[in-house]
Image (cartoon, rainbow, N blue to C red; front, side, top):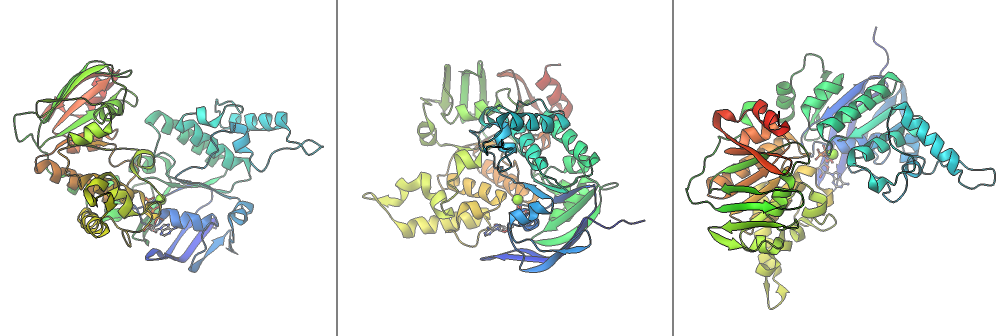
Length: 496
Ligand SMILES: Nc1ncnc2c1ncn2[C@@H]1O[C@H](COP(=O)(O)OP(=O)(O)OP(=O)(O)O)[C@@H](O)[C@H]1O
Ligand SMILES: [Mg+2]
Protein backbone atom coordinates (compact mmCIF):
# COMPACT_ATOMS: atom_id res chain seq x y z
CA UNK A 1 0.00 0.00 0.00
CA UNK A 2 1.29 3.42 -0.84
CA UNK A 3 0.00 6.16 1.40
CA UNK A 4 -0.42 9.70 0.16
CA UNK A 5 2.74 11.79 0.43
CA UNK A 6 2.76 14.71 2.86
CA UNK A 7 4.07 17.01 0.17
CA UNK A 8 4.39 16.89 -3.59
CA UNK A 9 6.67 19.39 -5.26
CA UNK A 10 5.58 19.72 -8.88
CA UNK A 11 7.49 21.41 -11.70
CA UNK A 12 8.79 24.21 -9.52
CA UNK A 13 10.90 26.90 -11.21
CA UNK A 14 12.41 30.02 -9.69
CA UNK A 15 14.70 32.70 -11.10
CA UNK A 16 16.62 35.50 -9.46
CA UNK A 17 18.12 38.34 -11.48
CA UNK A 18 20.83 36.64 -13.54
CA UNK A 19 20.33 33.13 -12.11
CA UNK A 20 17.82 30.39 -12.69
CA UNK A 21 17.95 28.83 -9.22
CA UNK A 22 15.36 26.07 -9.88
CA UNK A 23 14.07 24.52 -13.09
CA UNK A 24 11.07 22.16 -13.19
CA UNK A 25 11.86 20.41 -9.93
CA UNK A 26 9.44 17.65 -8.88
CA UNK A 27 9.55 15.07 -6.09
CA UNK A 28 7.48 13.85 -3.15
CA UNK A 29 8.11 13.79 0.60
CA UNK A 30 6.45 10.99 2.57
CA UNK A 31 4.80 11.34 5.94
CA UNK A 32 7.05 10.65 8.92
CA UNK A 33 10.32 10.28 7.02
CA UNK A 34 13.65 12.08 7.16
CA UNK A 35 14.07 13.16 3.56
CA UNK A 36 17.59 14.29 2.71
CA UNK A 37 18.14 16.94 0.07
CA UNK A 38 21.65 17.07 -1.35
CA UNK A 39 23.49 18.82 -4.14
CA UNK A 40 26.47 21.03 -4.80
CA UNK A 41 26.71 24.62 -3.63
CA UNK A 42 24.25 26.67 -5.58
CA UNK A 43 22.22 23.61 -6.62
CA UNK A 44 19.06 25.35 -5.37
CA UNK A 45 18.42 23.50 -2.09
CA UNK A 46 17.96 26.57 0.11
CA UNK A 47 15.88 28.32 -2.55
CA UNK A 48 13.48 25.37 -2.75
CA UNK A 49 13.22 25.26 1.03
CA UNK A 50 12.48 28.98 1.17
CA UNK A 51 9.62 28.35 -1.25
CA UNK A 52 8.28 25.68 1.11
CA UNK A 53 8.65 28.13 3.99
CA UNK A 54 6.67 30.85 2.18
CA UNK A 55 9.68 33.16 1.90
CA UNK A 56 9.91 33.00 -1.90
CA UNK A 57 7.08 32.46 -4.36
CA UNK A 58 7.82 30.10 -7.27
CA UNK A 59 7.70 31.48 -10.82
CA UNK A 60 6.06 28.27 -11.97
CA UNK A 61 4.86 24.96 -10.60
CA UNK A 62 2.84 24.00 -7.56
CA UNK A 63 2.90 22.42 -4.14
CA UNK A 64 0.44 19.71 -3.14
CA UNK A 65 0.06 19.37 0.62
CA UNK A 66 -1.79 16.27 1.83
CA UNK A 67 -3.51 16.00 -1.52
CA UNK A 68 -4.52 19.63 -1.83
CA UNK A 69 -3.07 22.66 -3.57
CA UNK A 70 -0.99 24.78 -1.26
CA UNK A 71 -0.50 28.48 -1.85
CA UNK A 72 1.97 30.12 0.48
CA UNK A 73 2.03 33.88 0.45
CA UNK A 74 4.19 34.44 3.52
CA UNK A 75 6.22 32.64 6.19
CA UNK A 76 3.23 33.05 8.51
CA UNK A 77 1.13 31.13 5.97
CA UNK A 78 3.61 28.25 5.99
CA UNK A 79 3.66 28.21 9.77
CA UNK A 80 -0.12 27.99 9.89
CA UNK A 81 0.12 24.82 7.82
CA UNK A 82 2.71 23.39 10.21
CA UNK A 83 5.79 24.00 8.04
CA UNK A 84 8.84 25.23 9.94
CA UNK A 85 12.34 25.99 8.74
CA UNK A 86 15.63 26.24 10.57
CA UNK A 87 17.88 28.33 8.38
CA UNK A 88 21.47 27.71 7.38
CA UNK A 89 22.45 30.83 9.33
CA UNK A 90 20.21 30.56 12.28
CA UNK A 91 18.26 33.36 13.71
CA UNK A 92 18.30 33.30 17.49
CA UNK A 93 18.49 36.53 19.44
CA UNK A 94 21.72 36.13 21.37
CA UNK A 95 20.90 38.45 24.25
CA UNK A 96 17.57 36.88 25.13
CA UNK A 97 17.08 33.74 27.18
CA UNK A 98 16.38 30.29 25.78
CA UNK A 99 12.72 30.59 26.80
CA UNK A 100 12.33 34.05 25.25
CA UNK A 101 13.74 32.77 21.97
CA UNK A 102 11.64 29.63 21.91
CA UNK A 103 8.37 31.38 22.67
CA UNK A 104 9.07 34.57 20.76
CA UNK A 105 5.74 36.12 19.65
CA UNK A 106 3.93 33.31 21.43
CA UNK A 107 4.68 34.44 24.97
CA UNK A 108 2.14 33.26 27.50
CA UNK A 109 0.36 36.27 29.08
CA UNK A 110 -1.11 36.92 32.47
CA UNK A 111 -4.71 38.05 32.59
CA UNK A 112 -3.45 41.63 32.74
CA UNK A 113 -1.71 41.18 29.41
CA UNK A 114 1.83 41.03 30.81
CA UNK A 115 4.26 38.29 29.83
CA UNK A 116 3.86 35.40 32.24
CA UNK A 117 7.51 34.60 32.95
CA UNK A 118 6.79 31.64 35.17
CA UNK A 119 4.61 30.02 32.50
CA UNK A 120 7.19 30.85 29.91
CA UNK A 121 10.01 29.07 31.69
CA UNK A 122 7.95 26.06 32.68
CA UNK A 123 6.52 25.65 29.17
CA UNK A 124 10.07 25.81 27.76
CA UNK A 125 11.35 23.37 30.35
CA UNK A 126 8.60 20.96 29.25
CA UNK A 127 9.60 21.22 25.59
CA UNK A 128 13.27 20.71 26.44
CA UNK A 129 12.40 17.73 28.59
CA UNK A 130 10.47 16.11 25.73
CA UNK A 131 13.73 15.97 23.82
CA UNK A 132 15.67 15.09 26.99
CA UNK A 133 17.83 18.16 26.69
CA UNK A 134 19.63 19.65 29.65
CA UNK A 135 19.58 23.36 28.90
CA UNK A 136 18.14 25.91 31.30
CA UNK A 137 15.19 27.95 29.95
CA UNK A 138 16.74 30.96 31.65
CA UNK A 139 20.19 30.64 30.05
CA UNK A 140 21.18 33.54 27.79
CA UNK A 141 21.52 32.20 24.25
CA UNK A 142 24.88 33.90 23.73
CA UNK A 143 26.39 31.73 26.48
CA UNK A 144 25.41 28.45 24.77
CA UNK A 145 27.56 26.38 22.43
CA UNK A 146 26.67 26.31 18.75
CA UNK A 147 25.26 22.82 19.23
CA UNK A 148 23.04 23.96 22.08
CA UNK A 149 21.86 26.92 20.02
CA UNK A 150 20.99 24.50 17.25
CA UNK A 151 18.91 22.46 19.70
CA UNK A 152 17.17 25.64 20.85
CA UNK A 153 16.30 26.29 17.20
CA UNK A 154 14.75 22.86 16.96
CA UNK A 155 12.79 23.27 20.15
CA UNK A 156 11.69 26.67 18.91
CA UNK A 157 10.41 25.07 15.73
CA UNK A 158 8.59 22.47 17.81
CA UNK A 159 6.93 24.98 20.08
CA UNK A 160 4.40 25.39 17.28
CA UNK A 161 2.45 22.48 15.83
CA UNK A 162 4.94 21.19 13.28
CA UNK A 163 4.15 18.70 10.53
CA UNK A 164 7.18 19.41 8.37
CA UNK A 165 10.48 20.58 9.83
CA UNK A 166 13.09 21.77 7.35
CA UNK A 167 16.70 21.78 8.55
CA UNK A 168 19.13 23.55 6.24
CA UNK A 169 22.64 22.27 7.08
CA UNK A 170 22.01 21.86 10.81
CA UNK A 171 25.28 19.99 11.39
CA UNK A 172 27.67 22.32 9.57
CA UNK A 173 29.13 23.75 12.78
CA UNK A 174 28.77 20.70 15.04
CA UNK A 175 31.35 18.17 16.19
CA UNK A 176 30.64 14.42 16.02
CA UNK A 177 29.28 14.17 19.57
CA UNK A 178 26.97 17.11 19.01
CA UNK A 179 25.79 15.56 15.76
CA UNK A 180 24.89 12.41 17.71
CA UNK A 181 22.73 14.46 20.08
CA UNK A 182 21.07 16.21 17.19
CA UNK A 183 20.29 12.89 15.53
CA UNK A 184 18.77 11.59 18.74
CA UNK A 185 16.52 14.66 18.75
CA UNK A 186 15.61 14.12 15.09
CA UNK A 187 14.74 10.46 15.70
CA UNK A 188 12.55 11.46 18.62
CA UNK A 189 10.72 13.96 16.42
CA UNK A 190 10.23 11.33 13.77
CA UNK A 191 8.74 8.94 16.28
CA UNK A 192 6.24 11.68 17.13
CA UNK A 193 5.19 11.73 13.47
CA UNK A 194 7.03 14.87 12.34
CA UNK A 195 8.38 14.79 8.78
CA UNK A 196 11.83 16.24 8.29
CA UNK A 197 13.69 17.60 5.29
CA UNK A 198 17.39 17.43 6.09
CA UNK A 199 20.03 19.27 4.06
CA UNK A 200 23.67 18.35 4.55
CA UNK A 201 26.89 18.19 2.60
CA UNK A 202 28.10 15.33 4.81
CA UNK A 203 26.97 12.21 3.04
CA UNK A 204 27.76 9.85 5.92
CA UNK A 205 25.19 11.76 7.94
CA UNK A 206 22.70 11.62 5.11
CA UNK A 207 23.08 7.84 4.90
CA UNK A 208 22.76 7.49 8.66
CA UNK A 209 19.70 9.62 9.32
CA UNK A 210 17.53 9.65 6.18
CA UNK A 211 15.02 7.26 4.63
CA UNK A 212 14.99 9.00 1.24
CA UNK A 213 17.51 11.07 -0.69
CA UNK A 214 16.76 13.62 -3.39
CA UNK A 215 19.61 15.04 -5.45
CA UNK A 216 19.57 18.44 -7.17
CA UNK A 217 22.19 19.64 -9.62
CA UNK A 218 22.33 23.15 -11.13
CA UNK A 219 18.75 23.85 -10.13
CA UNK A 220 17.44 20.64 -11.66
CA UNK A 221 16.13 17.40 -10.25
CA UNK A 222 18.52 14.45 -10.69
CA UNK A 223 17.06 11.60 -8.61
CA UNK A 224 14.87 10.76 -5.63
CA UNK A 225 15.32 7.35 -4.03
CA UNK A 226 15.19 5.29 -0.83
CA UNK A 227 18.39 5.61 1.23
CA UNK A 228 18.48 1.89 1.84
CA UNK A 229 20.94 0.32 -0.59
CA UNK A 230 22.38 3.67 -1.64
CA UNK A 231 26.14 4.29 -1.32
CA UNK A 232 28.09 7.50 -0.81
CA UNK A 233 29.82 6.89 -4.13
CA UNK A 234 26.48 6.74 -5.92
CA UNK A 235 25.24 9.98 -4.31
CA UNK A 236 28.47 11.75 -5.24
CA UNK A 237 28.15 10.52 -8.78
CA UNK A 238 24.60 11.90 -8.99
CA UNK A 239 25.67 15.23 -7.47
CA UNK A 240 28.74 15.93 -9.56
CA UNK A 241 28.74 13.42 -12.36
CA UNK A 242 32.12 12.00 -11.36
CA UNK A 243 33.37 9.29 -8.98
CA UNK A 244 35.14 9.50 -5.59
CA UNK A 245 38.58 8.47 -6.87
CA UNK A 246 38.64 11.58 -9.00
CA UNK A 247 38.32 13.91 -6.03
CA UNK A 248 41.87 14.21 -4.65
CA UNK A 249 44.78 15.29 -6.82
CA UNK A 250 48.03 13.28 -6.57
CA UNK A 251 49.75 13.61 -3.16
CA UNK A 252 52.62 16.13 -3.08
CA UNK A 253 56.02 16.10 -1.42
CA UNK A 254 58.26 18.96 -0.36
CA UNK A 255 60.30 20.14 -3.34
CA UNK A 256 63.16 21.90 -1.48
CA UNK A 257 65.15 21.16 1.69
CA UNK A 258 65.24 24.66 3.19
CA UNK A 259 62.10 25.21 5.27
CA UNK A 260 59.87 28.06 4.19
CA UNK A 261 58.52 28.42 7.69
CA UNK A 262 59.88 27.22 11.00
CA UNK A 263 58.02 27.41 14.28
CA UNK A 264 59.91 26.90 17.54
CA UNK A 265 58.26 26.46 20.90
CA UNK A 266 54.99 28.20 20.08
CA UNK A 267 53.13 28.74 23.35
CA UNK A 268 49.77 30.47 23.87
CA UNK A 269 47.04 30.08 26.48
CA UNK A 270 45.98 27.03 24.46
CA UNK A 271 49.25 25.73 22.99
CA UNK A 272 52.32 24.31 24.65
CA UNK A 273 55.73 24.24 22.99
CA UNK A 274 54.58 23.52 19.44
CA UNK A 275 57.44 23.18 16.93
CA UNK A 276 57.41 22.20 13.26
CA UNK A 277 58.77 23.08 9.84
CA UNK A 278 56.95 23.71 6.59
CA UNK A 279 58.74 23.13 3.29
CA UNK A 280 57.97 24.56 -0.14
CA UNK A 281 55.73 22.37 -2.24
CA UNK A 282 54.07 20.46 0.58
CA UNK A 283 50.72 20.35 2.31
CA UNK A 284 51.19 19.99 6.05
CA UNK A 285 47.98 18.73 7.63
CA UNK A 286 46.92 19.26 11.25
CA UNK A 287 44.61 16.68 12.78
CA UNK A 288 43.10 16.30 16.21
CA UNK A 289 39.85 16.24 18.09
CA UNK A 290 37.87 19.48 18.19
CA UNK A 291 39.40 21.89 20.71
CA UNK A 292 42.89 20.38 20.98
CA UNK A 293 44.77 23.35 19.54
CA UNK A 294 44.85 22.84 15.77
CA UNK A 295 42.71 25.90 15.21
CA UNK A 296 44.96 27.97 17.48
CA UNK A 297 48.08 26.88 15.58
CA UNK A 298 46.54 28.20 12.37
CA UNK A 299 45.45 31.43 14.01
CA UNK A 300 48.83 31.97 15.73
CA UNK A 301 50.59 31.85 12.38
CA UNK A 302 48.47 34.81 11.33
CA UNK A 303 49.05 36.84 14.48
CA UNK A 304 45.58 36.17 15.83
CA UNK A 305 46.40 34.54 19.16
CA UNK A 306 48.00 36.06 22.26
CA UNK A 307 51.58 34.74 22.32
CA UNK A 308 53.33 33.59 25.47
CA UNK A 309 56.41 32.40 23.69
CA UNK A 310 57.84 31.00 20.51
CA UNK A 311 59.82 31.94 17.45
CA UNK A 312 58.60 32.34 13.87
CA UNK A 313 61.13 32.07 11.05
CA UNK A 314 60.25 32.66 7.42
CA UNK A 315 63.13 31.77 5.05
CA UNK A 316 65.32 31.56 8.15
CA UNK A 317 64.54 35.13 9.20
CA UNK A 318 62.84 35.95 12.48
CA UNK A 319 59.38 37.49 12.25
CA UNK A 320 57.66 39.34 15.06
CA UNK A 321 54.21 37.83 14.61
CA UNK A 322 52.26 40.45 16.52
CA UNK A 323 49.28 40.86 14.19
CA UNK A 324 47.89 39.84 10.76
CA UNK A 325 49.75 42.76 9.16
CA UNK A 326 53.08 41.21 10.17
CA UNK A 327 51.97 37.84 8.80
CA UNK A 328 50.82 39.32 5.48
CA UNK A 329 54.09 41.25 5.14
CA UNK A 330 55.93 37.94 5.59
CA UNK A 331 53.89 36.41 2.75
CA UNK A 332 51.47 34.47 4.94
CA UNK A 333 47.72 34.45 4.39
CA UNK A 334 44.96 32.81 6.39
CA UNK A 335 41.83 31.39 4.83
CA UNK A 336 39.57 31.14 7.83
CA UNK A 337 36.88 28.60 8.51
CA UNK A 338 34.60 31.40 9.60
CA UNK A 339 33.84 33.07 6.29
CA UNK A 340 31.25 35.32 7.84
CA UNK A 341 33.38 36.60 10.69
CA UNK A 342 36.90 36.84 9.40
CA UNK A 343 36.70 36.49 5.67
CA UNK A 344 34.02 38.50 4.03
CA UNK A 345 32.02 41.70 4.20
CA UNK A 346 28.73 40.14 3.18
CA UNK A 347 26.90 43.27 2.11
CA UNK A 348 29.74 44.42 -0.14
CA UNK A 349 30.26 43.20 -3.68
CA UNK A 350 32.71 40.53 -4.84
CA UNK A 351 35.02 43.20 -6.26
CA UNK A 352 35.24 45.19 -3.04
CA UNK A 353 35.81 42.07 -0.97
CA UNK A 354 38.56 40.73 -3.18
CA UNK A 355 40.30 44.12 -3.44
CA UNK A 356 40.04 44.98 0.26
CA UNK A 357 43.40 43.70 1.56
CA UNK A 358 45.20 44.96 -1.54
CA UNK A 359 43.90 48.52 -1.61
CA UNK A 360 47.46 49.84 -1.33
CA UNK A 361 48.31 48.16 -4.58
CA UNK A 362 45.45 49.77 -6.42
CA UNK A 363 45.87 53.29 -5.08
CA UNK A 364 48.04 56.15 -6.19
CA UNK A 365 48.23 59.30 -4.07
CA UNK A 366 45.48 57.95 -1.83
CA UNK A 367 42.99 57.36 -4.64
CA UNK A 368 41.84 53.88 -5.63
CA UNK A 369 42.42 53.31 -9.34
CA UNK A 370 39.20 51.54 -10.32
CA UNK A 371 40.19 50.23 -13.77
CA UNK A 372 43.28 48.41 -12.36
CA UNK A 373 41.31 47.04 -9.50
CA UNK A 374 38.50 45.87 -11.77
CA UNK A 375 40.88 44.09 -14.12
CA UNK A 376 42.92 42.25 -11.49
CA UNK A 377 39.84 41.19 -9.54
CA UNK A 378 37.95 40.07 -12.65
CA UNK A 379 40.91 37.93 -13.78
CA UNK A 380 41.32 36.25 -10.42
CA UNK A 381 37.61 35.63 -9.99
CA UNK A 382 37.50 33.99 -13.42
CA UNK A 383 40.62 31.88 -12.94
CA UNK A 384 39.40 30.56 -9.60
CA UNK A 385 35.95 29.94 -11.02
CA UNK A 386 33.77 32.00 -8.69
CA UNK A 387 30.26 31.60 -10.09
CA UNK A 388 28.64 35.04 -9.95
CA UNK A 389 26.58 37.00 -12.46
CA UNK A 390 28.99 39.94 -12.04
CA UNK A 391 31.85 40.99 -9.76
CA UNK A 392 29.59 43.71 -8.38
CA UNK A 393 27.18 41.08 -6.95
CA UNK A 394 26.80 41.32 -3.14
CA UNK A 395 28.70 38.43 -1.55
CA UNK A 396 25.77 37.45 0.64
CA UNK A 397 23.85 36.43 -2.51
CA UNK A 398 26.51 33.85 -3.46
CA UNK A 399 26.33 30.22 -2.38
CA UNK A 400 28.70 29.02 0.37
CA UNK A 401 31.22 27.49 -2.02
CA UNK A 402 31.40 30.63 -4.10
CA UNK A 403 31.84 32.74 -0.97
CA UNK A 404 34.79 30.51 -0.03
CA UNK A 405 36.32 30.96 -3.49
CA UNK A 406 35.89 34.73 -3.09
CA UNK A 407 37.94 34.57 0.12
CA UNK A 408 40.62 32.66 -1.77
CA UNK A 409 40.63 35.17 -4.63
CA UNK A 410 41.17 38.01 -2.20
CA UNK A 411 44.27 36.38 -0.74
CA UNK A 412 45.67 34.99 -3.98
CA UNK A 413 46.02 38.40 -5.60
CA UNK A 414 48.68 39.02 -2.94
CA UNK A 415 50.74 36.09 -4.32
CA UNK A 416 51.32 34.55 -0.88
CA UNK A 417 54.06 31.94 -0.31
CA UNK A 418 52.52 30.42 2.78
CA UNK A 419 48.82 29.68 2.89
CA UNK A 420 47.01 28.56 6.00
CA UNK A 421 43.67 26.90 5.42
CA UNK A 422 41.34 26.26 8.35
CA UNK A 423 38.51 23.88 7.42
CA UNK A 424 38.80 24.97 3.79
CA UNK A 425 35.79 23.00 2.61
CA UNK A 426 33.49 23.18 5.63
CA UNK A 427 29.87 23.46 4.56
CA UNK A 428 30.63 23.35 0.86
CA UNK A 429 29.69 20.63 -1.56
CA UNK A 430 31.86 18.07 -3.20
CA UNK A 431 32.09 19.82 -6.57
CA UNK A 432 33.39 23.03 -4.99
CA UNK A 433 35.65 20.92 -2.73
CA UNK A 434 37.31 19.28 -5.71
CA UNK A 435 37.98 22.73 -7.15
CA UNK A 436 39.50 23.95 -3.88
CA UNK A 437 41.68 20.81 -3.66
CA UNK A 438 42.85 21.41 -7.21
CA UNK A 439 43.72 25.03 -6.33
CA UNK A 440 45.65 23.97 -3.23
CA UNK A 441 47.51 21.38 -5.30
CA UNK A 442 48.39 23.97 -7.94
CA UNK A 443 49.65 26.44 -5.35
CA UNK A 444 51.85 23.85 -3.65
CA UNK A 445 53.14 22.52 -6.98
CA UNK A 446 54.20 26.07 -7.79
CA UNK A 447 56.31 26.16 -4.60
CA UNK A 448 53.99 27.53 -1.94
CA UNK A 449 53.82 25.92 1.48
CA UNK A 450 50.34 24.95 2.64
CA UNK A 451 49.09 24.37 6.15
CA UNK A 452 45.71 22.73 6.37
CA UNK A 453 43.71 22.29 9.55
CA UNK A 454 40.70 20.09 9.02
CA UNK A 455 38.29 17.97 11.01
CA UNK A 456 37.60 15.83 7.95
CA UNK A 457 40.00 12.91 8.09
CA UNK A 458 39.31 11.90 4.51
CA UNK A 459 40.36 15.34 3.33
CA UNK A 460 43.51 15.41 5.49
CA UNK A 461 44.56 11.97 4.30
CA UNK A 462 43.73 12.79 0.69
CA UNK A 463 45.64 16.07 0.60
CA UNK A 464 48.50 16.09 3.14
CA UNK A 465 52.16 15.36 2.49
CA UNK A 466 52.60 14.99 6.27
CA UNK A 467 50.13 15.12 9.14
CA UNK A 468 50.74 16.52 12.62
CA UNK A 469 48.33 15.15 15.23
CA UNK A 470 47.55 17.55 18.08
CA UNK A 471 46.43 16.61 21.55
CA UNK A 472 45.93 18.88 24.56
CA UNK A 473 47.59 21.80 22.79
CA UNK A 474 50.75 19.83 22.02
CA UNK A 475 52.17 17.94 19.05
CA UNK A 476 51.32 14.31 19.72
CA UNK A 477 52.80 12.77 16.59
CA UNK A 478 53.82 13.37 13.01
CA UNK A 479 52.65 10.88 10.41
CA UNK A 480 53.52 10.40 6.77
CA UNK A 481 53.21 7.78 4.07
CA UNK A 482 51.90 4.39 5.15
CA UNK A 483 51.73 5.53 8.80
CA UNK A 484 49.11 8.12 8.00
CA UNK A 485 45.91 6.14 8.38
CA UNK A 486 42.54 7.09 9.76
CA UNK A 487 42.96 4.60 12.60
CA UNK A 488 46.42 5.82 13.62
CA UNK A 489 45.30 9.46 13.63
CA UNK A 490 42.33 8.64 15.88
CA UNK A 491 44.57 6.65 18.22
CA UNK A 492 47.07 9.50 18.54
CA UNK A 493 44.37 12.15 18.79
CA UNK A 494 42.67 10.39 21.67
CA UNK A 495 45.95 9.39 23.31
CA UNK A 496 45.02 5.71 23.50
N1 LIG B 1 18.04 36.10 -2.96
C1 LIG B 1 18.80 35.75 -4.01
N2 LIG B 1 19.11 36.64 -4.98
C2 LIG B 1 19.86 36.29 -6.04
N3 LIG B 1 20.37 35.06 -6.24
C3 LIG B 1 20.11 34.13 -5.30
C4 LIG B 1 19.33 34.41 -4.14
N4 LIG B 1 19.23 33.29 -3.39
C5 LIG B 1 19.93 32.34 -4.06
N5 LIG B 1 20.46 32.83 -5.22
C6 LIG B 1 21.22 32.08 -6.23
O1 LIG B 1 20.45 30.94 -6.57
C7 LIG B 1 21.28 29.79 -6.76
C8 LIG B 1 20.84 28.69 -5.80
O2 LIG B 1 21.23 29.07 -4.49
P1 LIG B 1 20.87 28.25 -3.18
O3 LIG B 1 21.23 29.10 -2.03
O4 LIG B 1 19.47 27.76 -3.29
O5 LIG B 1 21.86 27.02 -3.30
P2 LIG B 1 22.16 25.85 -2.25
O6 LIG B 1 21.92 24.55 -2.97
O7 LIG B 1 21.42 26.09 -0.99
O8 LIG B 1 23.73 26.04 -2.05
P3 LIG B 1 24.66 25.87 -0.71
O9 LIG B 1 24.95 24.41 -0.60
O10 LIG B 1 25.91 26.62 -1.07
O11 LIG B 1 23.92 26.44 0.47
C9 LIG B 1 22.71 30.27 -6.54
O12 LIG B 1 23.27 30.56 -7.78
C10 LIG B 1 22.53 31.52 -5.69
O13 LIG B 1 23.62 32.40 -5.88
MG1 LIG C 1 21.98 26.51 0.93
